[in-house]
Image 1 (cartoon, helix red, strand yellow):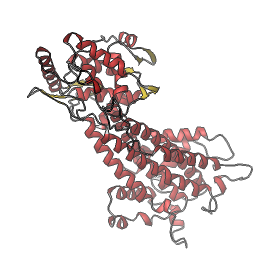
Image 2 (cartoon, helix red, strand yellow):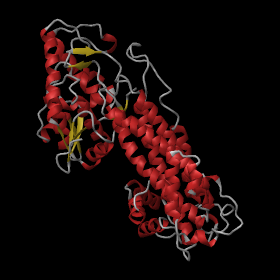
Image 3 (cartoon, rainbow, N blue to C red):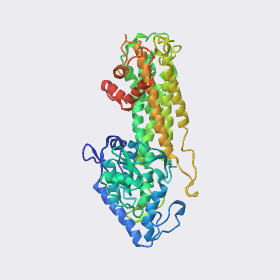
Image 4 (cartoon, rainbow, N blue to C red):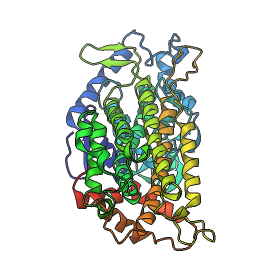
Length: 515
């Protein structure tokens, strides 16, 4: 990846990273094309122009679409064909995608067009870039894609704004596409031959969401290790199950990383030393099997990250042109199966992080399972309910995740008069994974609050080296629960500390980078 300045990303269609996507989507980095990409786009367009001068029939250039692919379109109707394509395909419904998702989608669409294999004009690519850099964000409804031929409906909503149709957000206001482009001083274009198709044929919606989920999941996985370490210390758990020698005998990488993190987080705990010779033989699975459970989810995330970064830098159009030989090849690169399976898998893996977290929450609030802690972590129980209902909320979220974790990719409903007779449902899988991730953050937030409250009953002892900074951060923002108060604000604060990497950064300041 060629980066020109600190806040500019130059794309070349083959080396975009998830970090680049996050910087553009969330931190508003500007985007430019490399000189090589400009050359490739222009060369690809020359091949399309040659088709118009000859008598060759090429799908999507001078034919109808989908099941209408055998219908040859006259030269005088080719521009109208492309415009009609965008108008007819904009059938999305539901709430709009979040701004960061839309920016990620726009970036990935430019990245695939920059390959030169799609046959669009450089003017179209630059217009899309200008929109991204100026903050013109198309209104893209969340629902309506079956994931093949790519994300047709949502990407059509993106394409509408380029031609002055549809709607877009600009400086916080929802405007018509024409008004948004005028306000940003960006010239509306007409889509020409092949361009309506090239704007929509691809997996950029599911992949853009996937890239953001992967980035957020990396934070969640490490933070889950921190919170588990806090809980285990608060429950007077043993650190023996995290001994390096055990995990060398079952050397899954994620498991080894989690065990290493837990050793670092719990090291030098005076709480641990105070009960090291007790008669308690083994901890519950939700404590001592944390490396095995968290680790398996981490390994899943590594797999999904690899799939996502490959897809981000892939050409998923159809037909795909090869400028050197002036060939148009019709294939199936638009099919979203790789992302569909990966995001379903990640949704399952994330759900397990919440599953085991909820079980650790139960061990803290249930005094029959943690005899040294008061019922529901409150001194005057009975008159106060303490953290009783937070476990209900966690249980609700875990149960919801079980429904959301049902794989979207096992379903397929044929479309386009059975021409498109197997579809991926990958965009549904990606959207579900992001919802699951948000639920996981809430469950972890509840566990974090419970762990801090539990530690308050043992402040005569110093906690582990990684537990102490987490405790101090939480107590700067959330007070000890002396008497009942509404806890939803505390939960939201704790979730923000997780999502913003606050907990992770604070602990890593003390311990160095976690694995």
